Length: 129
Image (cartoon, rainbow, N blue to C red; front, side):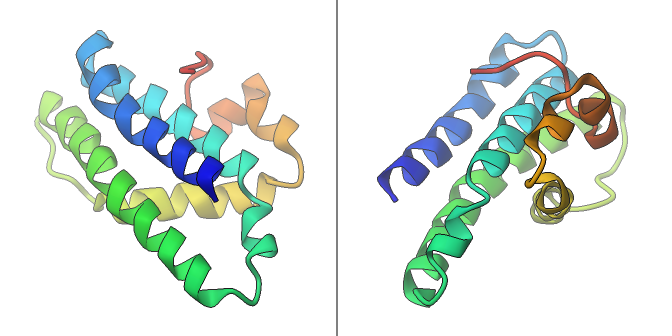
């Protein structure tokens, strides 16, 4: 569980850093989504390991949502402001959608990490960490 929390923190801390270092808000969002996808794919087995421990699973989900939704929201809003567009969906649902896409590909991480897979999932080819 400590590794999970550490990776959530790394993903959360990457958001502001990427926003400051990236050429555009969109580039920051794409790079952060790339990191988020990597995190999801490497942690897909954790849910199975926690099966039967609903308190532990619920606590991790609450922690995950509390740390990552605000980061995604900031990046999403900055990206949409840069093109003068209102958000069509909130950050929670963006992360949920990405997570749902990763569930199907989690058994084949090569799909997401391939150039074609990254285009399919809308993430950049550049490694963040």
